[in-house]
Length: 281
Length: 238
Image (cartoon, rainbow over all chains, first blue to last red; front, top):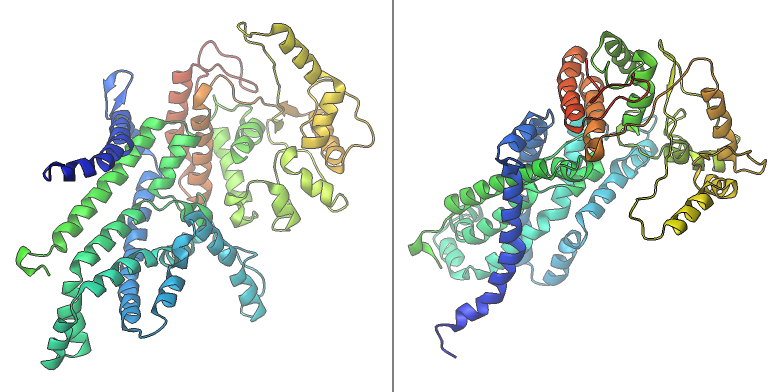
């Protein structure tokens, strides 16, 4: 086999797969979002933007990502550093921390619903401790910020591990010599973290952030379980248009909005966390 | 089922209409009253669906729902729950009976078999078996035997009282909307969420949602159904 054609042959199945199951459906969705019986139209985007819940859903999605992702970055870096420093039991710790990854997001939502609902664990605990006189309904439309916090907690619990796994692998790639050299020159732990480890971790951090942020904009099942219709998000509205309102055009328009946000943030992280050519390990 | 509550109970009881008087002074009164009553509801109810669950768990003591979605509560605790007719408003006692029609497509491959199936489905025994199993009441004239499950006996008595009342104002299920049915329901749910949950101004919301409703009616060309008066062509929204 010719050495020059082999790589392309090996890439062919994956490329075909992507074309059939990603590019083709994407073209169909884009077509659906921009056309009606008469041809090209922006009508579906107008319908989408005119609906009173669209701005609410848009900002809820953004704020959720903004609240969840930074916490996850800090948590996953801390956890990754802890795991790498461990002498024994490292694998067991990693397994335990990644258990939530194995649970579907809807199941995760239901677990947290069992904690927060009126007949849930939190109410029983507070009642048992004598803090409250009767069970309260935390997840009501009257205080959506509690629903927001519950969703943020569930998301942090569920999806921090995906960043952790990437960062643990990334930390393993950094040669120990840099850290030791900095230590010899008298750099404190804090300085070594900021000036040595984090800059060298940039490629993994970039991958982890892109993956996590894209997932954050697609948040759906956890919100559906905890918030129902009280806290609309973009993905929930997409579902509603497609299946409740039977309007695939507006659903496609919403899906394109989510895609546009995801692409914008991917480009942002690619640019901000890029590693200059000369600085690559 | 809250969309059905607005379409079949709230609007007919206050405006004697579902579509035509959607945005009217009478509708404003209806929503004012409903917003006032809402303070007595369980705030979690926006996410409830089968009210038998909340009745049995005692999250609520008074509930509105389809008889089939209440059956378990009556069957499990027949001595603890009662059924009562829907309340009446200024324009009568709105409620939503279901009228079922059965048809065979002209192109059906086995016409005789289809007719036999329909005849079987309409038999009193079949209707009673359906009622026993699902709490969906017979669509043909049937004498109910005495050994029916508690849910059937309790809700049956309330339904009979409601439909036999002097001020009964039955409204039909929305019809002629095709696959726009979901959007039609959404108009009522959006109106409720904006007025009652989000606290928006009633007149402004009704004005805005009436535009959406008018567009749906004109696009589908669906004529009015009771309690709205019959229309030539699409049911108008005033």
